[in-house]
Structure formats: C-alpha cells, structure tokens
Length: 468
Ligand SMILES: *Cc1c(COP(=O)(O)O)cnc(C)c1O
Image (cartoon, rainbow, N blue to C red; front, side, top):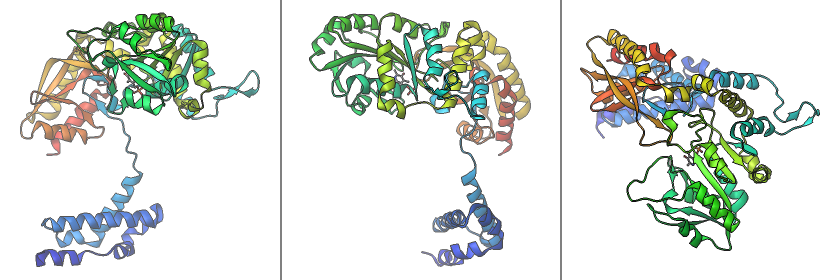
C-alpha cells in the first residue's frame, strides 16, 4: 500500500468518534444509536474502499460535518418506502415485474374503506355470530361464472398447490409433457407437484400428446388428470394436445378428477383475448376444478380463484392449508369491487384499466401519442430526437405470447448520451419511467401510460435530460 493511501486511511475517524459528533445528535435521538452506528460503519467502509481503489479522497470529504450528513442520509434512507409508483411505458399491459394490474377506481375505493375501519370480514351480521370470509366472494364468482362453488386464495400458484394437496397428496397426477410449464422462474409444475406431495406422471411428448397416452398413464394410484394452459409459450408445427373436453370424458370413464389450470383467467369478451381459453368454456366442458389468477387478464388484485364442483371446492376450503393461503380483507374488497364491474361487460372494459388497455385500438391511442410527442419535444429541445411511430405492444403476464397489439410509441434518440444512459436516468426520475429499448432507441409506448401520467412522463424526460 502506498504511503498516501495509508495516511488517508489513518485520517478516517472511528465509528465512536463519528457518533460523538454533535451533528449526529438529532439522528441518534430520532432513529436510535444502533441504526446510526450501522450507517456510520457503512459510510466509513465506502470511504475506505474508495481510498484502497486509489480514488482521491480530499480533506473536505473527511470533514466531520460532511461525514455526519452522509451518515444522516444513510440512516434516513432505511425508513424511506422503497415500493413506489412508476410509469409503465413498456407497452406490456400485464407486466409482472411492474405489479401486473392497475386497479379500477371502484376497487381502490373499496380497499381504502375496508382498510380504514373494522368490518364484517368474518362476522355474520344477520346471525350476530362468527361468519366466513369466503362468503363475501363466493356468490359473485358463482353468479358471474355459473360455477357451483368458488374459493379465493393468495394467488394462482396457491390455488394449484391447494388443489393438489387436497386431492392428490400421496397419489399420482397425470400431466402431458407438452404442459410442464414454468411461469416467471419459480412456478414450475414438477416443483409445485413435489411441494404438494403429489407424484407427477408425465405422458406423451413435448409436441404431441393423445388421449391414449393418458390412458397408459392411469393406474391404481391415479387421483387426477391435470390440464395446464401453456400460457407463456406456443409449440407450433407438428403438434397435438388433448383438449379439456376430451380430458373430462377420459376422467369420467376412469372415475378421476379433472382440473384445469387456466393461468390468466379471461372473463371478458375482448377481441385481443380471442385465443385465450375462457373460464366459461373450461367450466362448461365439465372440469371439476378450474383455477386462474386475479391480477392477470381479470385486472383485479393478486389472488388465485378456484371454481368448480360444490363438494370439491368445499373440500379445499376445509383443508388446513386453506388457512395458510387465505387472502386478507383488502384483497377481498378489491376483488369484489372488480368482479362487480363485470356484471356489466361494456362498463367493465371502460372501468378496469387492464381491459381498457387491452381493448384500445391504435387509432384511439394516436391522439395521446401525438400529445406526448409534442410535449416531449418541447421539454427536451434538441437534446433528444423524438419520433412518433407505430409499434406493437404485448399482453404480458405470461399470456398470449405471440399476440401483438398495434400501438403508437414515441421513439427517443439522445444526442449526447447513450440510449442505455437515458433509460437509466429515466429509471431514476420521480416517478421513474420504464420504456423499452428497440433498434438503438428508447420507445415509450402510450398503451400502458395512464392518461393522468402523461404530464409526469414529459416532466421525467425533462429531469433526465437536464441532469447531464
Ligand atoms: C400465471 C400462471 C400461474 C401462476 O399464477 P400466479 O397468480 O402468478 O401465482 C399458474 N399457472 C399458469 C398456467 C399461469 O399462467
């Protein structure tokens, strides 16, 4: 180590010395000595690393007031909420990393009300006695879908886990090799099967599975035939699968349960969703249990919805794991309010942001894109090229992977910084803006920008450009 570095290291105060600094007295009073000591350690460690990396550290950097300010900031940051709203300009409507669904106003209102007060969550007002939280949601789901019974749990992964645990623990479940899906890295059919103590029996091949393949897999330990919607990929070419209708016929013949994991749960009749299996069709085919997500194509809160035969769903409600997977009052309120909008399908498309974004035509999006382009140009002048152009948005959320929705984007080409740098700066604005990089430009897709966020998007680009 060079002498210069050694002497710089020697000039660093100790944690104890820093804590004695009067400038930190307030921070210690407000946030406690332990957190401020941790923050001091962290600030000193960062300085030590800078010195060892040969970076210049001036006496001003080590001035006690300056160090105390850094420690104060570090301690304050711990208390700052990290979960924050942002602007989704990716054009991916159901973006799992960006929180999937934006709730309808009615749902937001319902969450606020139930959060701010006691409620009859598990209290039967008519009887003046204990009630069940399931009762709040069962009726509206059965009314909407025509199912005999319904149950809501934490998410669709939980719905599948609970169904397998209830009906197939210690027994065998038959799944086509073409349907052994992975969703978002952590939901994998073989793993969820193992977690529920069910034994997976694979039949058929990746591209072709026939009813006879299921027949060969059926044995004395078989409990269930499971159909899984391959929501986030498509096998094309020389393919054959067994539809839910055929599977139900096979299940009846062998006296086996049939379950359909739909994934996205399309309840709305939108052209964009034409290729997505509908909840109604799955039920009409006679599946005993059907599961789907609350926050994918349904446009509600994160939840897993189970519908199906009365006794089968009742058995799931009674399983000990149902308690561990149950939803809280805020989810129930949001889901109830979202589903209520579905009773009037035309209203649902207007009021539920996910459906509205999926339904929007390119022609309808163009005026908003023009307003955005004009605002961006005015905000950044010559620093960034702004070009209005047609592009394609995606559904996302592991649904309809091949579908492209015609859309309009503002394509940004920065003059003096790289497009990656511009994207990084936009991720750091308040609120952050997330676009997508394509062909060396940063695209802002208006399909997923909420109308009330248009001005903020313009402001964010101005912030990002003026930072330089
Ligand atoms: C998305 C998906 C799941 C998991 O649903 P979550 O609500 O994300 O838990 C399970 N199965 C299929 C087919 C899916 O598409």
